[in-house]
Image 1 (tube, helix red, strand yellow):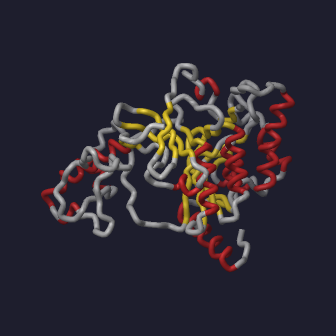
Image 2 (cartoon, each protein chain N blue to C red; image 1 turned 45 degrees about the vertical axis):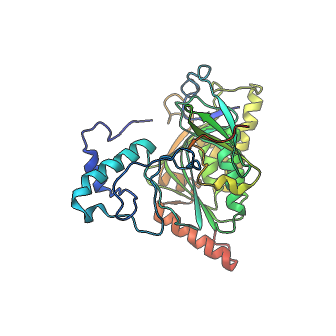
Image 3 (cartoon, rainbow over the protein chains, first blue to last red; image 1 turned 120 degrees about the horizontal axis):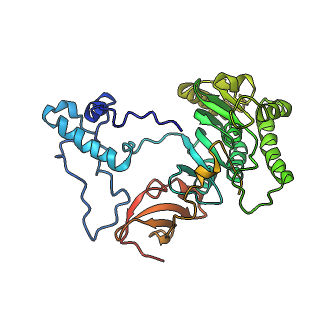
Length: 295
Length: 75
């Protein structure tokens, strides 16, 4: 993890917000007010979100010059509180996207410093996506450093056995157990700068509650290898070779594949970003509707 | 559990024995049970949804991480 943040770098946050057009969502004509919760009423499921009226357009702060700064400040507050801008309401998309970031958390709750994706959140969502008739396709956004092998494989198997079209994009990194998740979709993309580290399960790694024998770890490793082999174009021999390569990683065996290397090795289907991935997903959805497998 | 990650286990599991989790279960009006972490007397953070209805897991208002006010019934 390398920290290359713009925070504390002297950038004027107000200018930053204006530049990227973060606009507060508020009813037209309503005076700027913090959200109020009336005691005794129905609990507000979005206590930190501003009241809004989906039928009306959000007001444009640039139409009214004197509120410009005020709006920016209020909005900044919302960003500080939530860490994100509020998504627009009532925009229903027929695709669903699931980001898988940080550590993949499985049977053990990891210490709070870790950013994790918990499998008990992802797996039922995958069931819901498969079952919901309004959702036509699924996009998986991956930026993970690995994690619980069982949780990762469980998510991978769920994705690969879905009937709805699925596409994945590897951004930043899709390392270790991120590799089977990336290949589990019908079609996979990697952005040019993303990397994937393929390495064996470390004997020195955290092993809790399972026999720590070489045979056991070897079997676990085989599960990963078999899954990748079955769901991508790479052969078992080539994948093993990447996994046990020496000399590339300083203190470990394994390989780092960056962008197109992951495609030439046969693990990922194509180098590309969001627009390509969305286009592909739409194509797969259309293909499924007319009964052609475009995968 | 086997941790298969590029991060060393010492880093991932640092302070593993030191943190404590206190979960409560809340029952929503429609019967959905959610597991929450208490922030203070009036607020809780949704940690997990417990339901056999898959669509519950796509509900926006109780997505994990959402902070709820609690004048809800505690089961």
